[in-house]
Amino acid sequence: MKRILCILLVVCLLIACACLTLVACKNDKMKQATKNGDNYTIVASYDDQAHVLSATQTVTLTNRSENSFTKILFHIYANQYREDAANSVVPNVYVARAYPNGKSYGDIAFDSVKVDGTAVAYTIEGQDMDILSVPLNTELFPDQKVTVEMTYEVTLANIMHRLGYTDNAVNLGNFYPVLCHIDNGNYTASPYYNVGDPFVTDVANYNVSLTLPENYIVASTGNLEEARSQNGTATYTYSANAVRDFAFVLSQNFKKLTSTVGDTQVNYYYFADADAETSLATAVGMLDYLNKNVGKYPYAQYSVVETDFCYGGMEYPCLTMITSGSSSYQEAIAHETAHQWFYGIIGNDQINNAWMDEGLSEYVTYLYMDSAGGKSLNRSMMGCIQTYTSYVDVLSNYYGDVDRSMRAVHEYKNDNEYVIFTYVKGSLMFNSVYEAMGSARFWKALSNYFDEGQYTVAEPSMMVACFVNASSKEIGSIFSNFLEGKEIIGKVTD
Image (tube, rainbow, N blue to C red; front, side, top):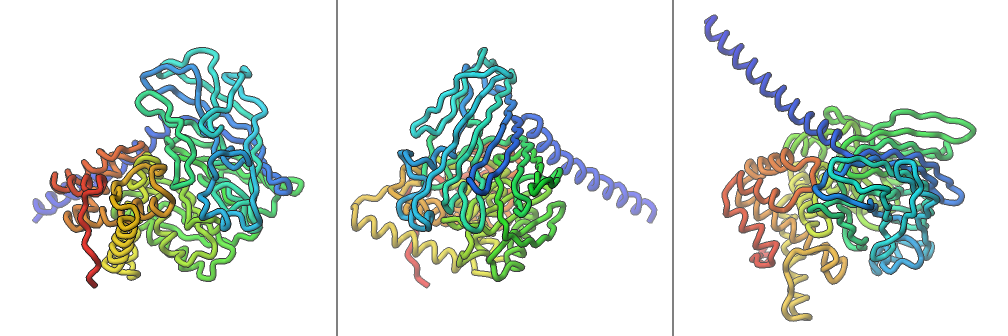
């Protein structure tokens, strides 16, 4: 008996050690991502009368490519809101909804840019004046660091969008200059597209402070480190490590509900949601669902925010914007929460491979809703089949031959086609994979994808390999058939 007890004790100790090793390994990945990440410091103030955000920003970056650089490139998405922008910030079909008070414009204007303390002659470049080009004093070789400091003002448009103000809230998404992603040793200075989420960003570390009138309530990426009030204003300071972006939503009307999932505080900020408790429960349920099935959420807080937004919702690290007045709060919250893993923790090229995060987040939402006693998976897939096949039939009758491949966001004819192919067909693709693999192997593949891809910008080959390795090489053909437009989808028979 003693021998059996000793054996059991040894087994328990080995299991405990293995679990501790696994946890330490996961923590080490975030620590390594924090260590390798560039560092942003932003000191900003918001004038709610002029609707202007004034900021000083410092970015300390390391050249981790194999090439040397003579300039640093930043995306300046705030400049897309200007009146003379060649590309509208929203598709034509959304203009009336996005601008309920009529067209309004904004921009970003720079006062100065310095490199390692010396002023430089920066230029605004890009296909639509959406790139800040900062010349370097000396060539930046691999593993060398440089610090870029800039002061600027962002004028907000009166628009229900990622960046803008309305009567209810102020959305501050993509408000600051962000480093262009480097791929194969070169900057990917892709333009802004008004279809999809045209962003490809690397994880970085942020220290951000915001001063504004003290009657505002602030929802934010990151952890609140300090809050102080003086002379009718409040200043909040936040930190966030190993995140892909940083965003705020401000409102004088917010109410707040709070819960916890594991080590994460979950907040719901709202002003009009008549069923706020259910909305919070959806965020909590989805976070817990993905914690258990994919991998643990690594951040200390996650906020879902009801705001004015012309689409269904928008994801940022640790923060999700949800459209006020939505007819489907729960599905929107679940979908955007899934993005915390798929694009947030595991990045991808959202321009060329939007299906990797949008299609997967949509399908995982269907799985969650089914598991939570909502709409059944079968019903959701029947709806997807009907929507997709009907759309293709209409296009075939109108155009003849139809390109059914899944492609870059700017290669679709319009926003509707992008949604049909990326969300709907993307869901059908992952459902085909799910049915071929079974539930256990499907989640094992996603867990492996999480372990391998977290804090990186993952390529499609990485994702597909995780599914193939968890099942069989035949799974790869399902992906290729759908991506190339060679899939066979039956008609709805129910």
